[in-house]
Length: 151
Image (cartoon, rainbow, N blue to C red; front, side, top):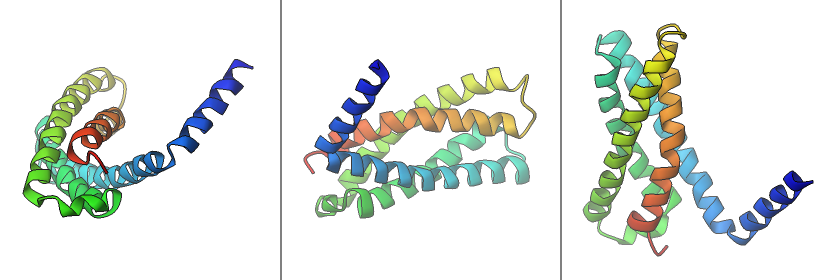
């Protein structure tokens, strides 16, 4: 019974904040595109260039940050295009680099626990998925209240 009440409350809050839920869904879709960029660059650098996963992750996240900013500015928060591009990009990068630090910490921690039991290259890909999933909430929250505030 209690689970049903929680479920109904979640639906009510989502309906009351429909526009914000729509933005979060768009942000998550953009994040999905960024994840494809991130995983692609990560695996290309590890498998083809022979770079260590920990270093490749820094480059792959940076490529994803750039992709995510462009798509969020154009699609998730189109009203924000009236603000100066470089100022907003700077804010997005600051939030994203904070997210990168959190991502890297989560990635390395997960990799430490996953590597002994999960074969390569699945070990670092699983660790990456965990890090991306958790950092999504940080990035949306901080970008919503700072980078794309008041929209």
